[in-house]
Image (cartoon, rainbow, N blue to C red; front, side, top):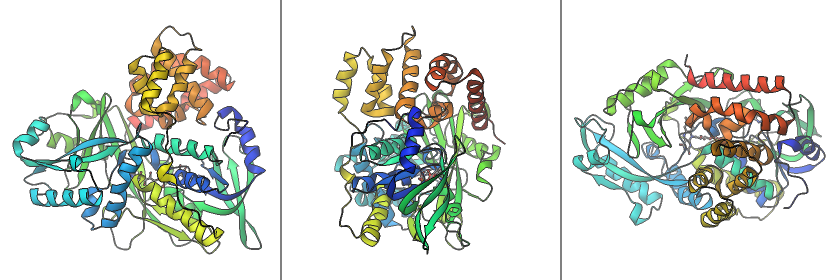
Length: 533
Ligand SMILES: Cc1cc2nc3c(=O)[nH]c(=O)nc-3n(C[C@H](O)[C@H](O)[C@H](O)COP(=O)(O)OP(=O)(O)OC[C@H]3O[C@@H](n4cnc5c(N)ncnc54)[C@H](O)[C@@H]3O)c2cc1C
């Protein structure tokens, strides 16, 4: 749908809010994480008029804090959750087809040890079932490895305990980019997603929901949004939005740490035994490796969510025990921590609770979807929108998201266009791996800036692109959800803020004091993810 104004430009926020408050929607989605984004695209592509609100930045909740794997969840086989493994396993190839720039095949090594959780027979059987349920191509099916082959595959393994291993197929992704790409696609189908707009309460007429009151977090103004139906996809905040006595979800905290690649130079991603009979991942990304995750019950205030020293110690000690390396606290470059919204199950520890999703319909008509995984977002969204079609709107419209690609042009076309713009191959790949083929616009913008150093020009253009096209409102949005620099290239941030200052202030038309305030917020964010309590 062509629009006169680009509502994804941060400059057009006021007009977007005006448009939202004067419209009548079929569906209002609360929450701009992967679940809400998926619903927004599915509903818009079936012809519904959709609005989505997030109280903070898109994907700033759990959907930027995952292990960043599109996976069937091998460990769910232990819970005999074949349905979940089949669904998420099958989704992997579909999502790779829809977003090849950010959903990429990845071989995962699973070393088998004498005292480890999985033996050779159980690993082979589990992976066979996994491959079968996920309909993995013959060439990608698991390979069992001898002790020697496993050590050849990963020389850093401590060889004393290794008895063999397995190589199997997974996919890695960029969780927040996937969420933002889906939201941008939903906009082309007529949806109006907006960040920094907080749902506060429902609006009723004759006991029927007719919309919601929201607060614009950037201006503190209240706005009313009219909508026939409301979907609560607020993840870890689902119970707060529901506002019912009986809680539906329980939260599990998961931490990842990032270290320099040279401290643990793995040849591929590894799923290995942690200190306590759990399994964790070590995943190479650019010049870093990230290790995670923990899985512990969390019942504190969400704004107090921080990485604890003991969680860092657990991850470091696990890696030091499994690999011939000596990692210490000083090696940690960055970290992230997220909350899994899990469906409450009586008398179960969070580690035992299934990662399945569930839909609840409240008496007042509010539809809540909770639980699930990043990998299963498309099927979760399909179930919610099927419900809308069948039960509420009496419409016979089938889900089409399996065929909605999240890119504009092929990789080859992108490269050809980029070369014409005099972009280097290295820069083209770097930008493609974040923004996909839309990233070409960054090189178009780049030609407007005449900074002598190429890297500076590229980052300035990336920033302007995000301000203009991705509803990026501040420095934190840019360095976190837009390009994850605070996690994977944190060392570049200090020098970058100096040279982006001028173009940023100019684009946003802000004063020096406003700039200082933003910088202070960014520094405090960085302080949180690099210092542990
Ligand atoms: C450590 C960890 C590792 C994981 N690893 C993987 C993995 O590798 N693969 C995988 O498939 N899954 C993984 N998961 C699970 C996956 O990340 C989550 O299932 C998924 O991100 C949840 O998305 P969501 O949209 O439901 O929630 P969120 O991403 O948290 O989105 C909810 C949004 O609602 C907004 N919101 C809340 N209240 C309001 C309000 N009142 N008004 C407006 N907006 C509101 C929030 O700001 C937030 O952005 C992992 C989870 C964790 C914690």
